[in-house]
Image (tube, rainbow, N blue to C red; front, side, top):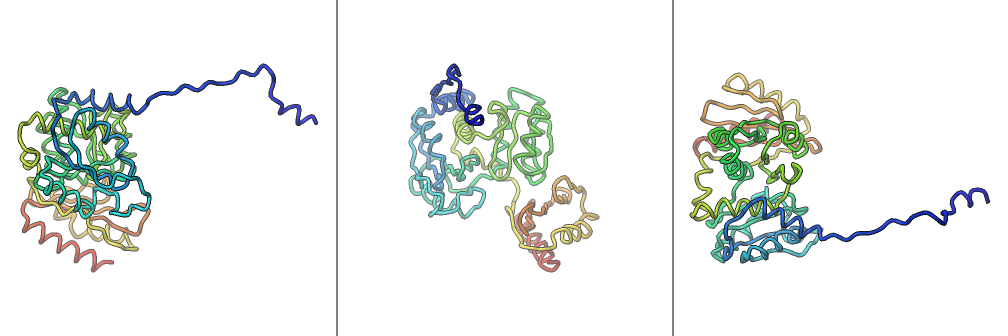
Length: 324
């Protein structure tokens, strides 16, 4: 009985209140206003939601800016029946690329399942890696804030590094992974950061991702250029890149040590911030990293020529396979 008395609410306890807010509308307002877009009406795009949740934002952005859009797989479905919702995997972009070409769209956009990553496809059907898209964002910002800090990761292209430095930016290097990059953004008061995988972090959004803002910002910078999207991004593809090559292994540390021993002494620069990256003058580089939660190592190679890329890819794949 005493316990029941203790748990009886007092008659004069005040009740709380509920206030409804249109959060999405306020968010979209900011996505657009921060980008300060030119007239984007009449642009024709294809958006692949991959059966994720991305239609909630992108659809409203396009409606407000009078952008003509063709939607692929907009219905949320956690089984992802059409393809994995991962725009960093090139094969998942096949339908999007084909649709862009068939519909003669000006560009294409792909989102991941939870809509915190975005990839761009040009009007000729070629994808733009995340580290190259970062160049577009960084250069536009650095036009107005020279000397600002940009957070990069060791798996990013020479194009990314060179372009940011040439534009007057200061590089802040971070281990790969959104948590690390968000922390670096806050620590160094950086103006932008991004990953190969398609995460982009903006200080206007508390150093977090906003694919809807990234979408408007990319379209705005491109539209102001006055050229096709393919011509706009073509100069960014100055080097040949393998993309991520994954190997299932159970002796990750041993393979990384063997790669360091064999290639480290020959490299002109070795970076061990996250895995091992070895640069060989301006001929080629590779980075190899161990997965934190899977029996995998991940390899990326970039080279000055396609011939060199193929040669080094075959060489390193054989090395890893021989040491598994």
